[in-house]
Every structure is written in C-alpha cells, then in structure tokens.
Amino acid sequence: MREFIVEADGGSRGNPGPAGYGSVVIDAVTGETLVERAEYIGVATNNVAEYRGLVAGLSAARDLDPAARVRVRMDSKLVVEQMSGRWQIKHPDMKALAAEAGRILPRSQVTYEWIPRAENKHADRLANEAMDAGKRGETWSPAGGEAAGPGAPVGGRGELRAQPQPSGSRTGTEAPTPPTGGEAASAGAPVEGRGELRDQPQPSGSRTTTEARTSPSGGEAAKATDDRRAAHNVATTPTVGWGSAPDMGAPATFVLLRHGETPLTPQKRFSGSGGSDPSLSAVGREQAERAATALAARGTVQAVVASPLARTRETAAVVAARLGLDVAVDEGLRETDFGAWEGLTFGEVRERYPDDLNAWLGSPDAEPTGGGESFAATAVRMAQARDRLTAAHAGRTVLLVTHVAPIKTLVRLALGAPPEALFRMELSPASLSAVAYYADGNASVRLFNDTSHLR
Image 1 (cartoon, rainbow, N blue to C red):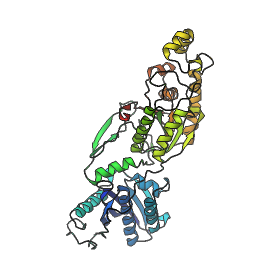
Image 2 (image 1 turned 180 degrees about the vertical axis):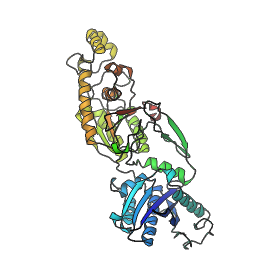
Image 3 (image 1 turned 45 degrees about the vertical axis):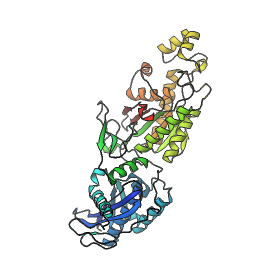
Image 4 (image 1 turned 135 degrees about the vertical axis):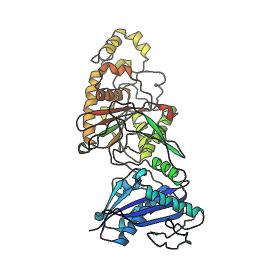
C-alpha cells in the first residue's frame, strides 16, 4: 500500500481578507513531491483557508491512489485537533469544511500530525504565491509556469481551480474546545502584526526567557494572529522547564491563575474561605477578561478547574467562555481559612491578636485565631488536590483558577522549598504561573506573575 504525506496551509491577509491555500502531496518513501495545489479563494478567514488547503491536499492524494494511507501534516493546531476528533467543532462553516474533508478518504486511512510553522514552508509558500497571484488578478501556477486565466488548470505537478468568493460570503473563525500539553500558558502578551512573543523551553535550572520572533508579513502574519486567537492546542510536551524523555510521556501541566481583584484586594485584607466570599470588582472582571485573552492567545489549556469560592468561579467562567470549555469545581483548591482574621488588614490583626500572629508567622502548624487553617494543613490539602488532579489529567494542560495560598503552596512543594518560602513570594491578582509534573516525580516551575499585560 502506498503512503503519502499531505502538507497543507492557508492564510488570510486581514483575517478575514484576501486568502489562499497551498497543499503538497509527497511520496512518504522517496520524499518526491507528487502534486502541488494552490488557490486564491477571495475574502475568507485564515481557518477557512487552512481547511480549504486540507481538502485540496486530500483530494489530490485520493486522485493519485484512493487506497493509499495519508499522513496529514499541518501547522494549524485547530484543524489537526478538530479533524483528529479531540476538539469540538462549533462554527457551522468549520463543521461543513471538516465534514467535506472527512468524506474524501476513509477515516482509517488518514492520520493527522501537528508540525511547527517552520516545517510547513512548502505549503506556506504555495499559499502565499496563490494570494500574490490573486492580488495581481492572476491564477496561481507552479514555479516557472505562466500565470493562467481564472479557472484554468495548470499543467505539471501543480494545478488550481480558482473559485474567488465575494466579499460578503460566509467565513468563519472558531475558538475550539481544546486538549493537549502543547506549551505552558504564558503571561507574555502576543504582538499583533509582524511579530509574536513565544516562550522558549529552558533546561533545568536555567533562567526563563521570552524571545520576540518576527513573522513574515502578509498572510503569515495574519495566520500567526489567527492561530493565537483560535486558542488552539497540540498534543506534545509543554515547553515548561526541562523536557521529559519520550518514553515518559507528556507531563501534567497546571497553569495557575490567581483570581482577579475583589473589593478587599487593594485594601490588603485577609480574604480566605471562611470570610464573606466577595465577588470580583469591576477591575477584577477586567483582569479576568484580559487573562482570558492571554490564555486564548497561547492556546494550551484543555480543561479549567476552579476553587468553589465566588471570585475564582467568576474568573474561571470568563476564561472558560473564551476557550469554549466548561468549568469543573474542586473543593481542594479553596483558599486557606483565616478564622477571625477574615476581612482584617495585617495591621489590624497585629493590633488585636499579636501573639497569635507571631506564632503564625513562626510556624506552619500555627492556626489563625478562631480555628482557622494552618499552612501545614493547607499543604496537606493541596498535595492531595495535586495528586488527584495530576492523575485525572495526565499529559494534559489544565488551568487551575485558585488563590494566593494554594498557588504558593503548589509552587513551594514543586520546588521542595521550606514552609517559610510562602512569605517570600508575591502573587498579583490575575497573575499566571505554571508547574509541570513528570512521570518520574520531578516537577518544573515557571513563574510569570507579571500582570503588565493585563492593564
């Protein structure tokens, strides 16, 4: 049985805007390029162009040999995850295109693989050539050929059936319902236009850096923007800390999001699980929206789990709505109970309960006045929640929307730091951190805690 590789891509200059696709069929054994197809499709979104490229590539492979096995390689995580059945498809345009692609060859003959954009240059070049030809009012032809008239097939290995769409035609961009452990979510804000920020994987113990990478102009820039907006994901090891060996599998990665501000936050008042359970303030709701934008741009989160308290559930709901996910609630993620200190400032506690406060600052076993929860008890609870959630989400990236003490505790435990480390961490509202848990028991921590992108 023959085996083909189909590489496909699509782009839109404006998203929606002038769009085109490119696809190539390669002999999997010899590496020979068998067919090239490209097309300017008029005004459409990047997602539509990507799907059109997939349809063209699969059709070309079927025309060569309808019994062949086909391995599709695309840098669109949206298309790969949706066609693999791991993400839901909600937008009607995406459903129609996915159904069309699914009918071309039997499902058992086709597999899908995500590849980095840098490895999809052939199809990307074809898509840009098609868009360039469309801009000139010409029909794409293979390199070295002459521009053909609209609708004319092109000889050699390439061909095109141009079907420009009117500007008012239906197009669609969808934020999918994800899964995978692609790369851990970052607080770094995406840069629109020609560039984007991407976190680079770092070896164990190295300093985490963020590098600005410049994307090509035109369709490629629109594609990068749309990829981020689509909140898509890929089933690979996240780029958090060190990478695990392939036989260990992908880690369970927790992206830790502190809830947005409440009215008590700027006043620096104790606000745990035993107090008034305040809701988000207007500032907190804005922070949640911007956190949702940042997380959707990264496109790595597959599930959302929140503390049962109002402020975390509100924050989680905003993010989950943007990602197309449901929110699960885990009691283990609740904030520490600060007993009689709830609603008080640190100064007020020191004035009213000086001995209890000194004991609390000196020992993780000390409880806040009035039967609150000690940090030692919080650590036991968080370790149990960690073990429960890592078992339930092995190899996946999960957003945990929780509070200061739970996040600090998870980070402390992952680092093997002593309890007093809790008092040496600053955690801003709506800030992000990440911990990856590996099969050998190791953990990798990435601290962002930079809310500049949320203002």
